[in-house]
Image 1 (cartoon, one colour):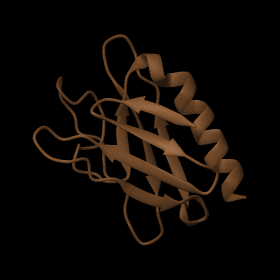
Image 2 (cartoon, one colour):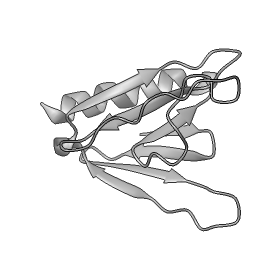
Image 3 (tube, helix red, strand yellow):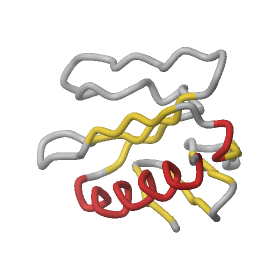
Amino acid sequence: MDVKGVQGAISFDGEWITITKTPIGARPAPVRIRAADVTGTCYKAGTRLFHGYVQFLLPGSLAAGEKSGVMHGGRPPYEDPHSLSIPRKSNDAAEKLIAAVEQARN
């Protein structure tokens, strides 16, 4: 199960979540998270004007807050390794991915 994001992607194989961000000029640095370790998820749907995001919460770490302003549109910062901005066209895939992760957590 894959979700195409803004400058990256999220994939889920039933046990592991892999967030791959593609920074300009550097090699992709994937972050792997075990679904059983996730304590919660945050999801904000993308709209025509602003991108949304998918964020995974882990024990012992605080959720990165949403940045305000026109350029950020209420999303976590790009540097947050446990989140990825998504365009509006990826909303359905993101909802399915979050449902699959929530089911795997239980």
